[in-house]
Image (cartoon, rainbow, N blue to C red):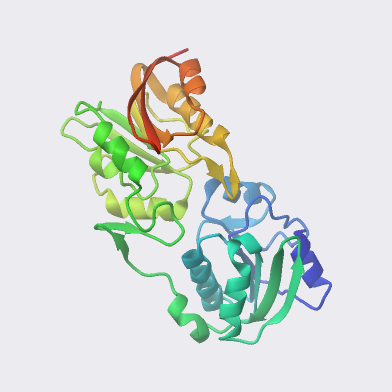
Length: 320
């Protein structure tokens, strides 16, 4: 079990079913919890991790529960929204577990101004504490019903929630006017790139996104009937048809850890799903080492745009 949670359970914390666990990652060990415990995790790889372990796993839930555990994300707005969500659903105890780097000390201070807190217990560079659920005390922490940026719907915690990502904007400016009939946006987020990919001869536009919350926003932002939405891990996703074009601004971290291999797996996925004459258009941070991977899986690679922060690649003729 996660070390802070295990220590809390031996120090006076008692949990009852139905129990809901919000936003755990694959770094959190829940194996000692009963399998009837509900795990709420919108990120597909983490969702599948806990589903494989036998938990009742869902990307979102408003079902009532007795107690709830919240594992803090790094985004402050999302952390507050999760506390509100837990209090709205649970009638018993709310447990909050987080690392110092995720702002647990600041959140604890804010929560103590509103309710009485038990614990806290410090261990492994973080804290765990708990309190009696009180929805009224956290009513102002509710997630905005319609959070918009430049006319697009977004949500707390999703990538680029507060504004259009400059790398994606640079990629958009670099795209050709002729864009193919079958297109995929890998790691589509809330759909900024995809909103600009529709054209008269488009046959299908596939938005592939691992974050269920972001994909829900994308559904609102890309109402074109030719758009298809896939809640999936882009690194393993298989297109239902061979693609003419892939666009992407791939992530380079999973959870808290920087991982350039993630973007390399996005590149390999793009190559697998393209036709022999298909092409990839992608943007990346200037320091990320993607050139070698691109050259391994594409016969032609060129940097077509960039600045001191980002670089845009056009790769064509996938190998194999």
